[in-house]
Amino acid sequence: MFEKNLKLAYLLDFYGEVLDEHTRSVMKAYYDDDLSLSEIAEGVGISRQGVRHVIKKGEEQLSFLEERLGLAAHNEELERALTLIDSIRKSLESDTLDKAVAMATLDEIKDIIVTR
Image (cartoon, rainbow, N blue to C red; front, side, top):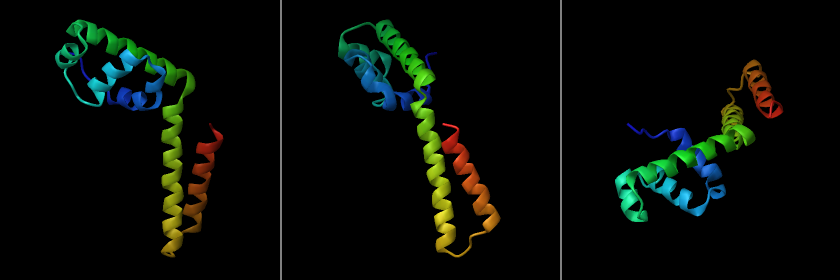
């Protein structure tokens, strides 16, 4: 069974514009529109196996780009840092800020930013 890897759908959001138009449209139909291989094949005029091949090649390209560039992983790290910053802000607003927790959180944010 050919199962969808949702991590690849996430990578498609980051690197989709790098793919050629045909590959990008097939992958978007598969991942974003949730069409079956048969539905995509009928729409683009190739075999079901041809669609599967296009998707596998596209997935390889997306994985290669992420291995080399790491933009999706970096974005996840930044989102995590923003969540931590927001938690400190909420603690300040509600006057429940624990200095030790705040310092540990700031160190964690620093680690996220510096390790990149």
